Image (spheres, helix red, strand yellow):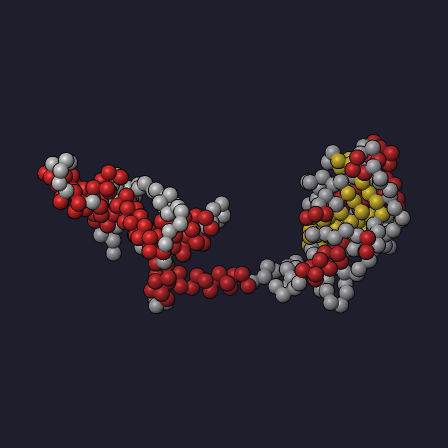
Length: 362
């Protein structure tokens, strides 16, 4: 339903530029309401003439044309004044004709200069796409109503198909822990919208604390996710050759007061590199997995606790061997985990992993 004339007019879809002069200078000082309203009306007329492309001298002549015709004494010849007025009139008509042509945003909401200033002040430096959609795409509602009557239109069912795809869950593969080299149970899934911030913090503390069982009645057990990549053990000779002693660790300003703490079943790892993954920790600590002992639990943290991790297993020998080892160029700082009340909160925990009974590929 687009005519050739409308297509041709798109080549002239840009309105000519206009000069804007602020209103504050004339309105400065003490004015009565009637004086301010009269000044505002005069400024509005001047602004509209200026937007139509007239210069200040032309605006002054156009607004005072009656007095210019009746004026007596010295001044321009009446014929010259009339010629200028006719030229201004033709200029105004031509500008109105150009502005009346169909433009790309012909169906948009027309804003006054003050409304545009308010809009710019409110949305300066922010994302304004939603606000602009409300201004320039008001035809979408009418198009949607038209499409709603046509059941054969695939766009009518787009929203329902989208919601249906969102509601579907990906099938999960359940595998045994004893038959896989490494299992990483993911943290509990997305929480309900009604959960409070306090509950989320408690959930983060429980994720970081070894003293809370992962199989409590009010929590569903974490889903096992298989790490399929082969993981090689780091040779013990390389660890001994590429590690720092406790004295050398204390020379680092950040760890000047380092102390391993009281022995416990949890290791607290600090100073991890940004590219360290769970499989890197498995390659170091899975050597301490015993067949008759529980699986080693790995928990790599993120958020404010990034570059840190918790590893749950009887860990005294692991600390003696791996403390100070330079993993990806950064010395690994290991301490025994504290009780839950002393543990720092974790913003979020990304997959915790378990080293299984079968040794990783070497």
